[in-house]
Amino acid sequence: MEYNKLVAVSGLPGLFELLTTKSDGAIVRGLDDGQTRFAANRSHQFSHLESIEVFTQAENANLIEVFQAMGKAGKPLPNEKDADAIKNYFGSVYPAFDFDRVYSSDLKKMVKWFAVLQKHQVELKLSEPEAPETNE
Image (cartoon, rainbow, N blue to C red):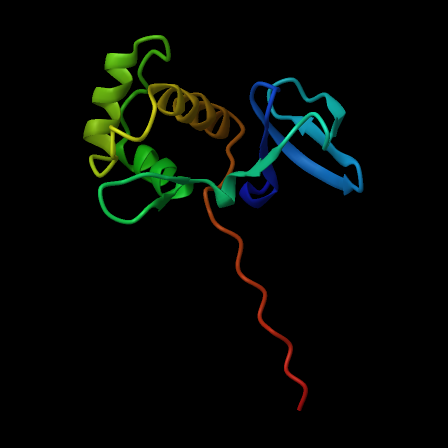
């Protein structure tokens, strides 16, 4: 499973692998339950994990940078129901966060998503941009 094929779908919990898109939605497979389902554009929004950025005290950071920092830290993940523990965890793992603009619900989601990525051994790497074709 590749990181660049993973999406979050509004209204549905967890992460999904994007299998294919259609004009009126997408077919996705849940990472946790393995179920394949159709998610309609009119009732769901899709966010590729590669395109998600988080607020920091300087430039915005891509979500994968946060996940990589979490992996390098090697610390056990905090209990997702303890907002203070989560904030302290990110304060030590990724201190550049702008905690005034990053909601605790977002931090909680990052902890859940990272646990799912680890469980499924997803390699945290951005896709390579396609090189433009040159006609010589």
